[in-house]
Length: 342
Ligand SMILES: [Zn+2]
Image 1 (tube, rainbow, N blue to C red):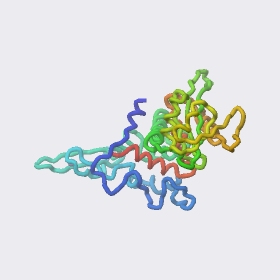
Image 2 (spheres, rainbow, N blue to C red):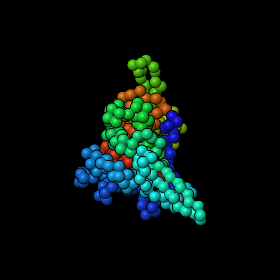
Image 3 (tube, rainbow, N blue to C red):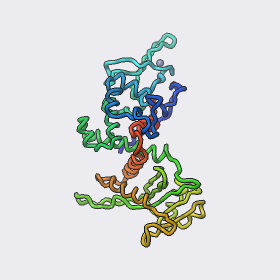
């Protein structure tokens, strides 16, 4: 847990960064789109082959790609004089590059140096930049942790840590940075609550279940899922207001926690699951139920600890959201939002 927290260093942007560049939106080619569907622009999709050929081909190429995209700082202020440090070659660091300042102030020359990884996704790790990018790529491809471990010849703990760093990034993005209400006037959102994780492992220990609550727009991939301790009105209503825009038509089962929704600016349609699958108006909650099933399948692949549910949910949501797009590019873009190199 300590590493988990340590790695999560949601960055504060420091001075001395090129002001004309918006770190969060840089791409390696102007034509690339992080979120857009790339059917009409196949070149924009960063295949593994292209990653190897164009990015991982040399340490210089890796560093310059990382700088272009914002994973590594393009400019670094000197802690002593505040001026921009220079990036110089070196043999005393694994990256073969470092930030350095050797300016003279008055009569005194100072010498400051800093890792090029400072504050970045690569900070505080023994993996090379190349290994980190490969891990990140394969993680985005949903390769199993053991497979990535084999490919990169990593120790168990390193792979577990990086898996967690990736999930944590999804969590920060989905639960905080990317928090956006679903629904709105004319939109329909299916909601449901469900218990996940209640099952016995083959080792025989019982895992406590976790209630989750979520909603999904009927005609898009916009959705939210949150873990909840209770599923009463006092818990769910504030979450509905937090996550679903007023004016939305909400479709749910007949759970009593939802009966007051019309008082809060929503239109409410219910499906009574004990009697019908589709109500007389044609409303149904099939989409959200399919969503739950998929999520439960995902979550039951491995033993999940209760305190990690939020990050597994976030990963699930993140993958769901980016299913039809270049998830690696989207993920890197979000990594840059969470880890501002400084
Ligand atoms: Zn200096």
